[in-house]
Image 1 (cartoon, rainbow, N blue to C red):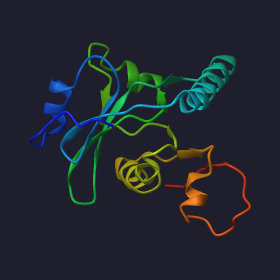
Image 2: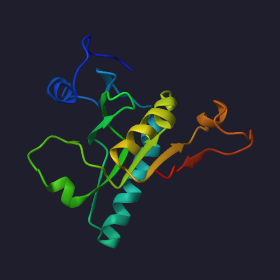
Image 3: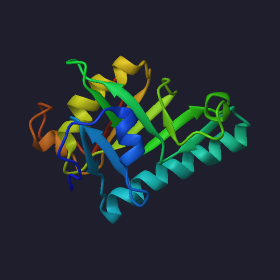
Image 4: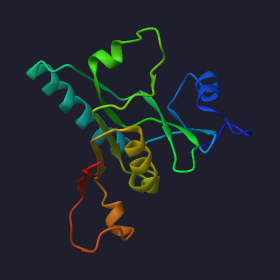
Length: 167
């Protein structure tokens, strides 16, 4: 990950200064580039397209998105800008301000994070921030069992997993 700012930014400043190309988050007041491996993208895309297909098949009032950024607040009151790997958003909420950039401050129906080198963000920081925002369902897709190897779980013989904490 690359950091692009020196001074601490607010969420609004992040939206104004965020580069157009690529994916970025606001973490501790700094613009941080979010990069993923091809494996990570394959897993996220599989989930994205699966949700999209089911939403269409069942004619549900949701939008699946992989670019939306959300304003979250840490336990210390610091504004963050988070971009889940996959978001399921109420279609009316998404379309309520069509001319806005993709940043939202409202809770969504589901946030999905595919773990990678920043697994601590997914298991600890984002879990707390998404709960504070009011997101009721958060999936952590740990296809490499990083949480297991990091000692977050007791058994050494569990396969890669999807963790769905109830918020």
